[in-house]
Length: 629
Image (tube, rainbow, N blue to C red; front, side, top):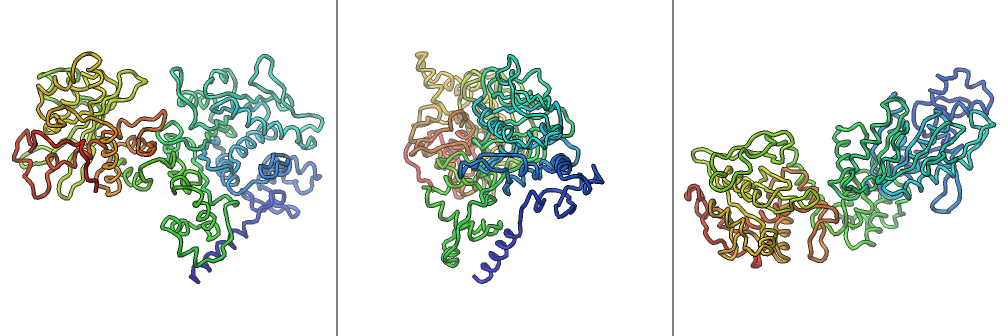
């Protein structure tokens, strides 16, 4: 314990040495030189070698052009959220880290491009907006900016900060002391304000009306709460962002910042964040964990008791460099939440936790992180089935796969064939809708588990298609993968057939040509999803993640799992999200618990059964309760 206390004291002292005084230049960004007791950016002296001999007001005017932190403390007024008073903007630690990313890009002569994942309110939007204001009021004339939120109210809220700045701006620090800076409306444009003294425009808009920004020469864009931008029949967030970013030139001092709190995974903002993390984007990712915010710390009365009461997660916080005071705050704050997942969603320690959608997710984040590791493998083929669209006996003759650009079929492993090969497969189908705005249909191909070898997803087709064509395509993939067992989730087909006065006609038609179709109750074709079987299937998926008993290949499957919710045993995707890929995993894992599908190690060798290979003809009823290990 003595070693822990000594290390904690070292960390506290290191934080105390982090003195910050932007007026004196202490603790500020960049290479600085002492001039008369103040640390001034070296760029100031390179611009004016005689800086030290200039009058004080002239020094200030020159310094604010290269020293953003000094300009904030000297010229910017904000409303303090704690006291409600108007105060100078003194950057906190997270704001200084974000600024360093932006200033490193600017100082290198590169366009400033950032994607910011926000957690709690530490002033990220404030820092971005003031950075744009600095460019307009100090560094450039005619430097137009755009503020675009998911709603007009968001954009206008950000602009109110700008208004407060202009009302309190020290006039003597303008280029011309006689100039004034204020917003005036541009004639005929309700969402465009101009600052005549600087010959610049500030345009506000929303993601729902991107046409409002067309026709303007934009040098900077602040895109706010991007994760909440909604897609419509007319455009998507992708369209809006590309339209905006395409209008901003690739030159020095231009700025584009995408910022948002997380709103789940699999959306445009999450995709852009992953691209930035993987260094495949022009934007640099910035995330601020809760423990970088100075407010979140609590004095420790009994360090030994705290240490002994820390769980594995809190010990990891210590290993990551947190102080006992920070961990004590976290430890006490957790007591307010009914689950740790809810706490992590509100106070994330890393980006993965920030993207956790809610405390209702039935899957464990660390299990999903491990599952995602299998998604690093790129498909060996992207394409389709040659002869797709064929029906009946013609559909199963000479099935082969072909490469097609932007094809909907992804193949990670080809079927293993040859003398002595006993590798068996299962094809699981989740039936979606036909139209582009409906749920997707998914055909997932499983390699079934073998001794010393996990089950794995080896191929997948996903798209919108007529249901009869989906049935034949599923059969073709089953034939291609060693005459696999074909398991079709039949709810949609049954309901559709009932409305037409028929009975599961599509599955019956396919079954006449292909005998390896899963039956329930010994006679009914397809897997029926109801409240009971869905719980059982999700339980099988939870267990498989915990035990790491299968290999996932598709990142979209993991994203759907991150966006899944459990409301008192009723499972569903979050509003606006999908679970079609997820259900092919859950159903497949549940079916695999049948020993007729995956024989035990001391059971019969499936190779004895030839092309039919399946030891069952009437598998047991999976709607009866299963023992979930």
